[in-house]
Image (cartoon, rainbow, N blue to C red; front, side, top):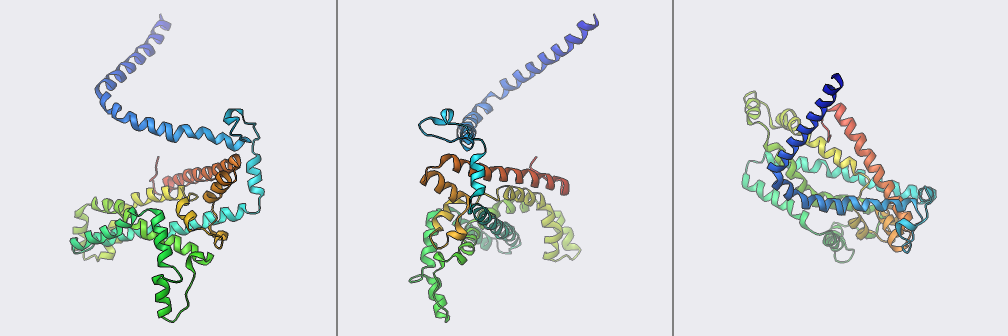
Length: 318
């Protein structure tokens, strides 16, 4: 009888769980039906293509396909790290990503704080719209504008330099100017859009904190240091984790459009290298191995930064 009692309880518990779950689905089936297309699209276009990473461990042949191509293990990874350009490409990717992060991450925070303390609401809306508008400019159009503005013959920048007594510069073909131009254009294009998140976070700060600080005679600078920044710090930490987690993923399109024979020494990054190896030279498995290495590094950085943030600030993605 003791055995009958102990085995019947889990059965009843499991049946109750299934019944509760069935009732929950019956009451919320319409919500899951609306969610289904998004889940299907993500599964098809985000998760199913991950099966293709096995090419990094094969000598892929388009005729044989993934299932028929021979397995070679880590040969392509070893071949990549043995190439003399591997360290230069990784260094270019890391340096460009870090420089972009240093200048693009604090810019939206500063803009959000300035707009938050702007006296004229109309002027704040005009500035926000003006800084938000560049985000909608296509990358190819942006690079085309840069070629015109920095042109050695008709560019306004060189006209200004010459008017001030300087010499004209070939900015877009000079490896020294590649990184400053790339980072500067990213700051100009993304600051307004990035500030939206921090503006929303500042809007949620308790007004009573400002009233108490004003009564105590706190200046705007003190209010920023002791009220605004601590209140939006969880948002800042989350955005920083996401940024550091993709530090190896420099935008391919803009770098590729700005790249030329004279600045390849600093503009060749992992994304453009994968493109040239995979699509131009047809070395699919080698390109897949390099791309997989890049993704693994990004994933590892995301995990590490998230763990550090959870221990230091108790704010994390999970």
